[in-house]
Image (cartoon, rainbow, N blue to C red; front, side):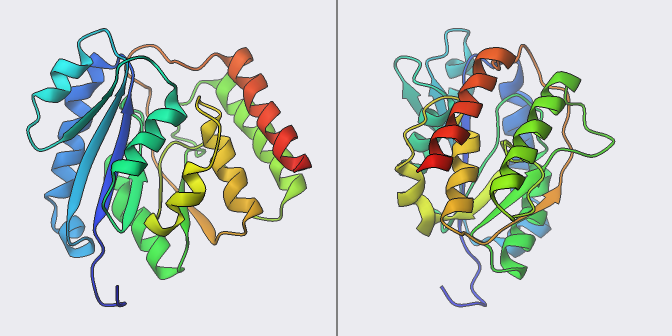
Length: 236
């Protein structure tokens, strides 16, 4: 793809029992894809939703959208597993992913892409930490601890190492699919991969809203899983 060609992009959205958020999230993504700024940036797009064993009617709600590709896990495999299923199925030159809980604003995708393009990055991160962020305080503390820990191991200035809204080059997919983490710890494992492999990475601030419904994150259990990833991979 030459510099003056517009890339195609794949949205990957994992879902687990988010029936109340499906409609607003998918409508927002579809709305963004109709804006002039999006069409000026990308040649084509696809939206892939990977349902990870929902039992609350999410699948039926998603299936109402004929222009969205739905892939279903028959049983729950985990957040990371759902993302990797979507990455495998993607056809875009670029891949972006965000959660199905309405906490991320898909309108940030053009700004993320501009950063990726202008700085010739492999991956651009959406940073959730600014005064308007609606992240619960205990999660903020945990994220800051993990970010500080990684800053001691690497010099890369990323301040939100667990963010769930990023864009990266399809050419990096084979490395991403090699990650063994299947749960929520996939997010920090992906950050560690990018740092260890010396990807060109950067970040911009993005809005972060209060999620719809109940969070799947268990602060203690998942916090331990995140810490285990750092410990294991820092020794590799």
